[in-house]
Length: 114
Length: 110
Image (cartoon, rainbow over all chains, first blue to last red; front, side, top):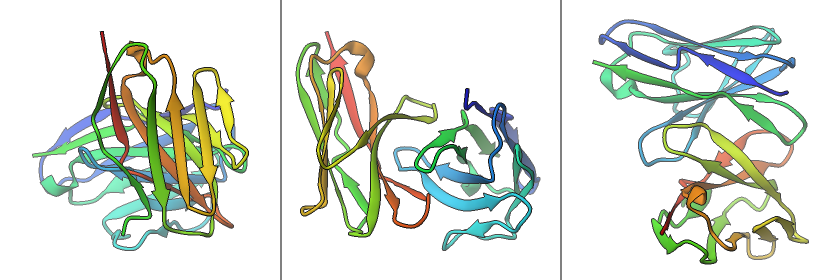
C-alpha cells in the first residue's frame, strides 16, 4: 500500500512552454501533498505544500505564479511549470502525507528545458 | 548555516566494512528525525526513524543526541547493495515539512 505515482516520469520541452506534472496517491487519500525540487548533487528542496481544496503554501523564494499548484481532489495534485526556462531543468518529486510522520514519495519527474 | 549538514563524501569502503555517517541540525525545535536512502535518479526512501534511545534495524543503527543536535547512522557488514546516498532528514515541530540534508554518498566496493 501507500503508493504515489507521478506522470510523466521525464519530459523534454522547449523554452517558453508550460509543463504539467501529476502526482497521484493510488491507494490512499492525501489531504496534503508536497512538491520538491532537486538539482544535481544537491538536496531535495521543498517548493510548496499543497492542501486539498485550498491554496498551496509556497516556500520562500519560490514563485507561485511560475509554479502553479492545484490539489483538486484527495488523490491528485498537479504542478505546472509555466514558461519553463533551462534553469528550471531539475528533478521534481512529490510526496503525500501518510501517517503523522511519514511521507510517501513519488518516483519523480525529470524535466529538461532546451 | 544550512539547517541540516552532512559530509557529502563519497565514502568508499570494502564490502563487509563498518561505516558511520554523521549529521548535525541547527533548529532546536526539530521534532522528528529520519535517515532516507536515495539511489541515483530515484526518489528517496525511508530507511529508518531516529530516536534518542537509539534504534537498530538489522545491520543499521541510528542514534540521536538532542543536546548536541547530532544524528548518526552506522552500517555494519556493508553490502554492495548499500551503495547509495544517505539523506539526513528532520521534521519541524508542529508541522510535517521535511528538511533534507545534501546527503552522504556511500560506495561499497569488492
